[in-house]
Length: 82
Image 1 (tube, rainbow, N blue to C red):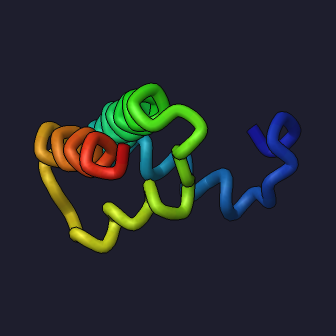
Image 2: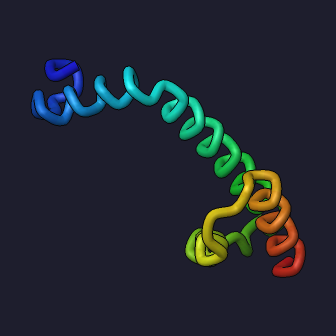
């Protein structure tokens, strides 16, 4: 991994430890990532050329939300901005 990423050995060791000690973290991160990308693409489809990435990210000011609520909020904001 050091050779493949170019990261220092200490950083690589922390990553390996994290995956071994907390195996669900990587999976939950990816699920969240896929939800975020899906919501962004839906907002882009709704808004078309009016889509603004900075405005899209304003939803983060709402704080931590369950993914289904986050997706719904993003869609509602996109429809309201249309």
